Length: 130
Image (cartoon, rainbow, N blue to C red; front, side):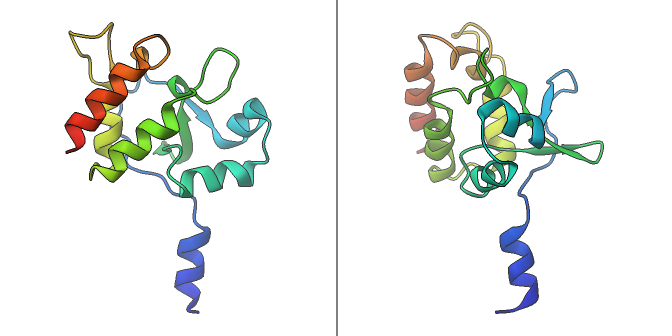
């Protein structure tokens, strides 16, 4: 195995910061503490594409909107991310889609994921992805 392959596998994936600066981020150690996992498990969730991280001002973080009021990952978020990834969306496109205001929802899709409209958001993601 080549050294650069090992480095790629162990790297913490993140994408470009396409979000408005008003979108707050949680640093990875804070995410780990909130969800009750080791930070290496959070890294694995990023590699598995169950979460998306961005790099802002040299720090890797995950949008705070991905978590409920108890600090846990929104229940249907990993499935939604999977639908969009499988549909060919890049991480940047997913973030833009999730945080773009939608007049037919109460705000952006990520806001609707916190309530009764989560299934509707997933349905729309399925339609958008294919």
